[in-house]
Length: 333
Image (cartoon, rainbow, N blue to C red):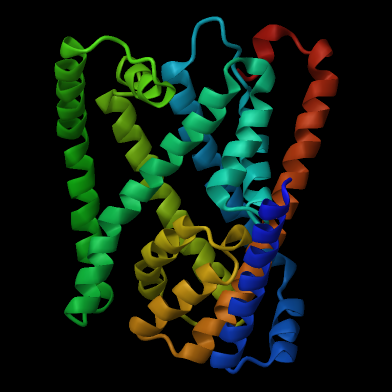
């Protein structure tokens, strides 16, 4: 690591701490009360959060596997579902210290090193997978914007979200056809480019990734991940005895997702919390309650990431130890 990168890392961490301190001051939080609330979280409540997080990791892993299956070569080996789940959970855990996109891409790229073409399958596959999440959230952000603009409530956000989700699903097939037509038009006039970036796009256009059925599956899985994220947010609020309407949580999530893309601080710490509190305040949640939830949510979700990553690593290690004794037909590939 160069001196410049080290200084940027320190500055980024300092900014995150500063933003959290600002949130505590503005929200007038009593850290002793927050700590007491966290200590009082029951094992059942935390177990529910872990279960929801397992589902979130599974959905993300399935999206990545679907993309990987579309463009890997026949000579490339296929990571098992356990391996894919472990890499995804490791990426989320690493995302507490790095921007989640970089953390996930790093974990998957390193994990697919022995499976062939790790940069394309690990990094490229992750960027595509997360891109569909961002695209889905962009449609749902319209529902949040309309609800805020017209001072709506739960019914308006729900109806708007259903309408935008339906529009996203209906737009998949025409969009893929348009991209394929543009790609065919471009490729008919030019040869395969020598520039690496342009070559990557050229290969993408000639791969099985530009498939309407696959894109539809990815959008559906992204919508499912959004719903699970909402349930996780509601669960962390209930775990510490706070009541925040689920629709306000759902309407606020697009703001947090777009804020996390900025990646100014490690794991988006401070940035994500301020974005969530601001959005919740706009939709009607008192500032003190929103700030209290944001801090507790960071701690509880981070703890669940660690638990899941450790459990997945242990299961993967056991699978590797038992692999020589397991018939090939019974392996999960």
